[in-house]
Figure 1 (cartoon, each protein chain N blue to C red):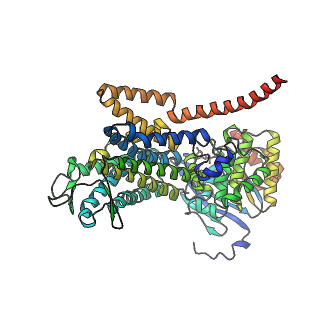
Figure 2: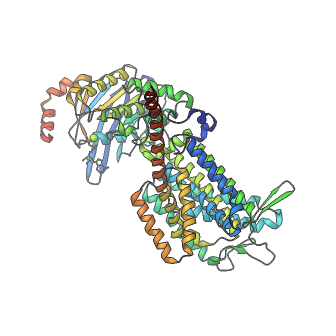
Length: 377
Length: 247
Ligand SMILES: Nc1ncnc2c1ncn2[C@@H]1O[C@H](COP(=O)(O)OP(=O)(O)O)[C@@H](O)[C@H]1O
Ligand SMILES: [Mg+2]
């Protein structure tokens, strides 16, 4: 299948490598290891404050991966992907507030934060895909759904909006309903009798997120390079044509939409645990569009490029925000320029150049050897 | 839905369209079309531009639903079935527009339809045999956009064949082909038919249709205008007249 890539490497990395992901030769995997190592060693050379921010960047990475999966691989642009982030965050918080005193851990909350967005996605996705909605209709419908949830959440300041120990709290965000209720917790995993607590501001939380993101990225690589990934790409390129081969395109779209909701939900869970707060602003236009920008600027058709887009842009905007509003305008201008220059995404375009340069270099080296041998004669 | 399936094997006609009507805004693209396709034969459909030929195929495959009328495949009413269900019953199509995945390699283009029927490890063998059948041997790694127009048409046919359909619908398969390529396409279709596939072909190229020498139907204003062997159709003055009118 990958006749152009190193065969030895493919033997070990088999399911991770394939035509659906850009980096698949040795230089990529070496670079990948270097990046992981740099991130893993970050607590050694960065201040605690930076590590806390880095945790947040990595949390955004999940959201970018989830949009790349549906948009880049299956052609479903959603302008409401942040809705699943918010739903996941709220679900985690609500369940955690209610069960923490009972269980002493957030295990159920963690799972709920992933399952609830999936249920939500199954319902709304079921309606959209079985009504055969496509393209811009889905994009806008999802934005509207997100805005509606946000509007609802914003008007929940009235004390009657409580779910057990959780008070929705309107604009101020989720909080405990009574003085006896616990505060919104960070992650507390209970395994058997032992309890592992990961404070959102701690280095261990950072490692947890980094590990989870790496696993998610590698897992999705396997997925998009599997048969399922090929069929996703078929649905992206031409859903009608793909259906004439006997595939129920609606079901494929629904399944990938739910999976993406799970990943976005996980992102929301981690965010809530990281800052121990969740508020309705996340459902707004800004956060939703931001996800699209990360993925578009990085490159939607490659998981890694979308991920890089999110991490770099999140880092850059935090850097610039301290320089004042004008710096954000500059960032906006750079983004517009980037989209004009590289409509498929900056990271994808750069990776393409890198690929070509590498192939050229290889060709040069092999012919170069031939030439030098001739010269020696 | 619950008609007996036992006699379907013996039904002479693999496909029947009964009173098909399809309205687009004010246009009646199909206006009460009745047409039967005999099993194991090649059937050609001709007609002036806008006669409703492509619309007919869309109704057959369920890409769009008819305003009224019925489609019976293998003795089964499929009018309300979604496209994928019809494909699973044995129908396949190559639309008029080029329907290959331009950005993907030839191998990936074949992988997608083949995967529904074969295990991953069997696919490369199947792909190879399809490519041989279609004069595309050795092109696995080529990006489809880099193939010639004719090669893309063949690949599109190959993708439709992946499911080993019993009925193959081809909408203008030789559009943009050279004479040699057209002749090869004709032999591909005859070979397929020989192997037991019923083929319905929409075409404009009269040489091509003469070569296939099969039952030919003429569509005009969304209705069946004439039907017969190609030589009968060729000598039909009425048919000549409607072609004159539009050409
Ligand atoms: N999606 C559509 N929307 C509106 N009109 C259409 C559509 N598809 C086909 N038509 C109209 O229906 C008529 C038949 O079209 P078509 O079936 O493509 O003809 P043919 O394939 O015989 O050239 C034409 O007048 C065409 O303009
Ligand atoms: Mg047509």
